[in-house]
Image 1 (cartoon, rainbow, N blue to C red):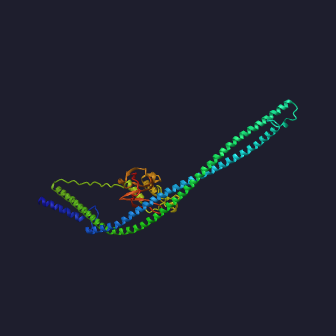
Image 2: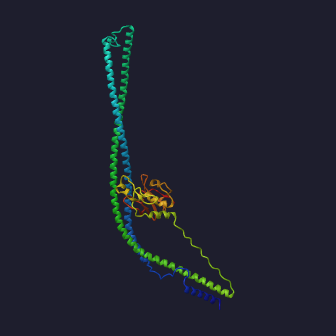
Image 3: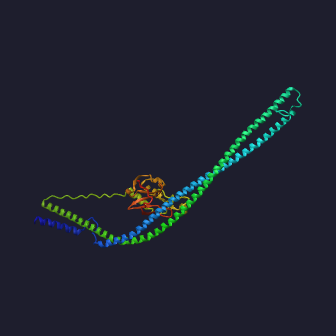
Length: 450
């Protein structure tokens, strides 16, 4: 037997063994090939999808603009509410100051009037004393006060008493006149303070009326914009259903193509496995042949195990946020354990009854998502903006937080999940959702915590 024939015989024997026993230790044999749509069919399906996607894109842009405007109006409402709160505080303070000034003015006026009455009484006594002294030709008292004295010593004593009495009354009169002047000055200052307090009170009342009117106008504008956004949302939903149908059609073709490609890959793996087993069988046969003929054996091969990586922290955070899709918005709601009851805000949230709902607001959803990896965030989007590392929007990655502001003041936060999409708890009346990133009013940096 020749060497060529011997090798051919060994391979034939090995292939026969593999064919007879099947692919030992592997999956079942690959089934027959599935349908494989043509490139022309796939291209036409993509054209149909692009056409529908264009319609959806227009409505999506319009809705994004409407929602951006709605968020701006929501922020404006919040600012106006704060202005109204400030005006109320200022008005309360002005009313309290005016009341205190009125009490001071009333007290100062009463003291001035009492001082005037006391001075008039002393003045009458002095006038009576002076009149009596004048009629008797003496500046120290009535001559009748000197009658009936029995000695010179008694006369001198009475003269001293009369002189002291007249001096004391004159001194008392001077003191009371000075007191009345002081009281009059205090009365004047108190009345001036009352005038100033009343002016401030009037100004505070005017500011309060203006703030209330501005708040009412902002709330009305937000309600109108919300109706417009709802209308656009309904229109987009209708067209999105049409787009989904088109995508399903082309998706079916693409799935068929992927299924066929997967089948091809499985077929290649099957053939490779058959070839490997055939080679091993041939090697075993050759080894046996060499053993019988006095040759050496062959070495087996060792396969390296495949290393499978687990999900990272970023995906954990994203999945945790996405697990709350459809949960109702509740202003002030949400913590590290999940949705919580909302709180009152004195405005829009109260009108939607957020304090009766259990859900998330925008920053509460971020707290819940990042708590999965041990990061504790404050329940205020303005503070969350300063957490982690700031990166330009052009470098944003899945898991980054995006922020929106008005006049430099942060009022909304969402999480970027990749592909131009984000997850957010948008506003009162809505639910946690995935939507396209809105660039109107967005802050120039994203916050990266992971």
